[in-house]
Image 1 (cartoon, rainbow, N blue to C red):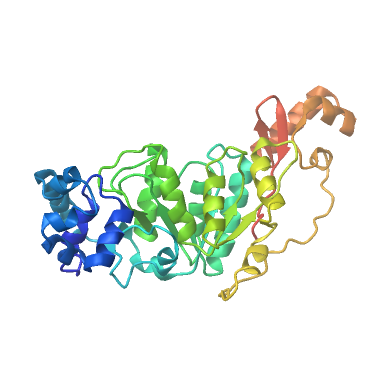
Image 2: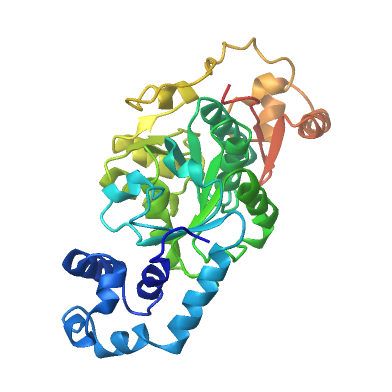
Amino acid sequence: MNPDPGLASWLQLALTPGLGPATFQRMLRQFGLPQAVLAKKRAELSAFTTPAVLAALDSEAVAHAVTRSLAWAAQPGHAVVTLADETYPRPLLEIADPPAVLYAHGRIELLARAALAIVGSRNATQQGEANAEALARALSEAGLTIVSGVALGIDAAAHRGGLAGAGSTIAVLGTGIDVAYPSRNATLAAEIAERGLLISEFPLGTAPAAQNFPRRNRLISGLARGCLVVEAALASGSLITARAAAEQGREVFAIPGSIHSPLSKGCHALIKSGAKLVESAEDVLAELSGFRPSGFASTRQSIPNADPGLLGHMGHDPVDVDSLCSRAGMSAEQVSSELLRLELDGRVAVLPGGLYQRLEKGHGR
């Protein structure tokens, strides 16, 4: 059970429908801790909210939700962290609207570690996922905890990389902490709960809803010293996280890509707006003032020798078979056969529209 004797009071206010974080904090500033707020006559609290919200505050439904949350918090590895707790993450106190309570499952000590957010497209390319995982691993090995949103694509790759290093990873959910979303990442979420940390500001049982994810994004950036965007279209939700990071005074980083790729457009827009261009983990570490890498080896890649065969003619942009035939002086059958071999070897990815793109290995190290 959480050691805070007033946890039920925190939960009663936090779980009351219509009583948002801003109203919650005004009450705390006026009266002190939640126990003192709840001790006031409801007429005194009417200056802060509506009669309907005050009725809900003392309702059976809220009492049931409090009991359920206390029972959840009593389980091993679970905790409900309040603004008054020493374990509440200090960086979140710097943002405009820190959540009054956080549901946490896993290694609570990760909330005290220096962190970096890594986000990007759910529909990422193979190369984008490889870059995210390799960079996250290198930065985790340097001692940074990797924060992301456990979505498909770049988020999932970032979490995998974080788990592979000493810094581990924190997943911020846009649902209740007991809701597995997306279901395809349920196994990854379970691994994060065991070796990293899951957190959510939403009540138990909260289903995925569009309006929850921008709120989730402000916590991803708020927990971290900076935010790295790996791949993002211009309409990507990852840019919301990057904007939140900038508004919160965090560093913003972006990886450039092909001028022909829609998933590079968002990153290029960020770089044009002043985001730091990233080619290696060292580019990130150099900008994080006050953070000292621990046991960190260089991530700069030596210049490779020219690639032999078809791979040497591909370049780094997506390319079609006809162009490769022209560049390499090979027949369509020869090119197709070689592309299949390279795909099976993990050196080439097939893209929509009959295009192919080379994959680089070990981008982060």
